[in-house]
Length: 552
Image 1 (cartoon, one colour):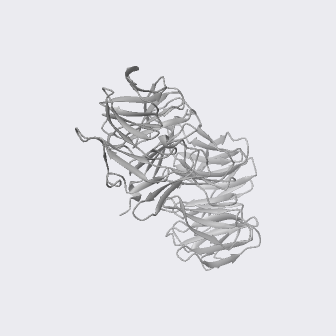
Image 2 (tube, one colour; image 1 turned 90 degrees about the horizontal axis):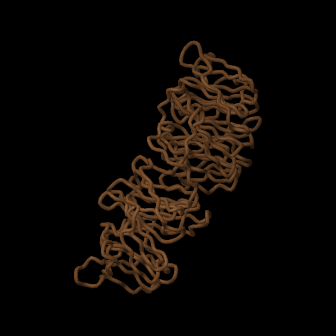
Image 3 (tube, helix red, strand yellow; image 1 turned 45 degrees about the vertical axis):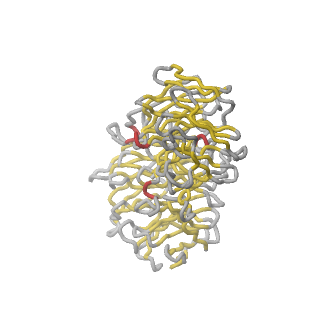
């Protein structure tokens, strides 16, 4: 769904990676290499589960996000917040599907049933609400005697749920009837097959059979501040967060034992979750998310990166897509050009160029070589990255945008009042068109298609020309939609995190995705109708695959 590429320096050892957050992480949820982090910034941070890099930010809550859970198929995310609401998010679009209002105090915990028909929410108002997802109405209200710190549906029985309130664990059916005695505990979680649940009660952790209530394992931790517990995806391991430490036990046989103790956070852990049978993720008040590897023989993808590249924080200055070749190319303000594999997200190669920061530039793979162009001091320079030598220099009066054509034969240069096409290899001016476009016009964030190029004008209109008509001047495209993706890029103010960019269906006007962040200017965005690539101020390169959300 979402892929993020970043040159990360991997910390080999027990903790494979640490991701720093601007605000402390309060909740975690995981599905198929996508990690959701609830934070005190009121936003939900989406991380790539393989690289650990930020993929998106979901904004909509007006209070801290305390609880998150993915639906069983990963298409939806449910969140609970200090703002007293529960929200259902569409993970394909990043938008809110429904907001459930009715709690009178902050929402501490949320859960979605396996059949995706119902959401349970527990609140500091001492109530559990069972919401009908289709209607948005509260189907059942369960009154407890104290704050409801945790709720969870059984993964196999949609009629059965657990709650934690007043230091006790309760079991209910969806009609609000208690169906078993209470147990002392401060957190509880079902196993993936629903046959067992784990209980944290201060320094004591127990695993019980869901039907017989028989205790099948019991552990003691040195720290009595147990806050969170969970099962591994295969049900073999149990993890518990206690203070700044996380503990993992193997319960797969009759003699359970402690497998790992993870210590690395410098403040209490708020949430933990398994991302595979061999890897654990934790979020802490210290403002970090850590990725832990369990056992020395782990084959989890986090620890088996085939490529690595030095950590860089240089802002990305240009990006380009060559989906037909399966690559993306980025250039940062230090002049480093990198290529990335679109399908795997892995770094492939890097080259140093003599470019200075903040000039217009572009790069493309031509005849198996990465060719880099940039404009500086009234000249367009063409550089062979592999040989490290200048191939061509062309004069231009000014440049406000530059792009290599899709077939690699031309360089399009945008200036005030005109756009021109120059031959990549001879420097000859192939054609020039006068424009009435305004100072804020820019090259449309499309992969230019051979001889055709589009300009997005200041009034939000789009103009297009074909420079490939032999012996004739450039011809304006009578239908600017021809050759352009049905899904359209609409940009916000690039330097402001509060102004997102959006992908819209041009035929229906329907929004299909929205992403916020400190991304670059329009030269740091490119869009071919399936893949969107964005360059970020942080040095990250984001690649989104929209194939699954194409309108029918």
